[in-house]
Length: 382
Ligand SMILES: [Fe+2]
Image (cartoon, rainbow, N blue to C red; front, side, top):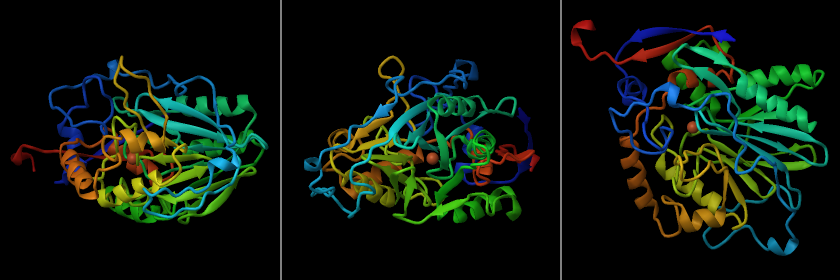
């Protein structure tokens, strides 16, 4: 357990930095700041939230094993719907996928393994953080370790889709633990090559020294870079829009899209963070929806409606083209951008934005102190 002390700084800040203090967390049946506009005065107590140590394994407690497709299913990955030509990373191999839902931040984490070699990657792991006590714990990450050990996997990479603003990454913790457990076979932490820009931006805002964030990621992926997960080939897809540095990972007939597409009933991720761009997100979505209909899009978050549906880690390209409320076939870029900008104006900042950004630009290294800006509404105090 590692205790953090928050340092307060008093200064005027733009909306995305301050609304977390002015507005209460979302109440009601839909969880997560990305999901719906905030309604003030509907605070949800922390005691109402699920335990951070509770894990839900996707739609089923069983791992997902896709069946290798036949050649006849692959005449082309590019449908008439396509806006960008992409080449698949691998012709036939499919991974074993373990989706692990972290209910406090509604984050989907993934363990993705090559069944032939038992080599695995972990995508977007969560470090538990209690904002009331400012305490970081590792229950969720330890559960991922138990899953990996139980399956007999060897972890080659911990992969980030972007610098998250709503949860802390467990990348550094997992790297250290697996280096011990795998007798020195230290997993590499990978993220898209544009992370440097985000690191500089947020380091400036939070006063983080260069030495604390430079070189913390082992691999900075190029766009369309292909790398191996055991004998599987994985391909990096640049998917800007939610953030500029955002990437997805395409493995077999699966794309782990992070905060690009959500469940079809929720649509898409917000685009109002620094570097966010709704036009870019529309084009990234079209890139994803240009893949073959059966390809599974594994989301970075889900915000299920309690009592109505369970968290769902994936939907197919066909599902999104038919049902995605923001991006289904027939919705133009102009319509999407107008909708997205309108919704984003009404969204509160994520509850853990300050803690998340400061830890995540450090790849999960947790400093002894974090800065949390406050909104001062009494002029005499300034
Ligand atoms: Fe995000």
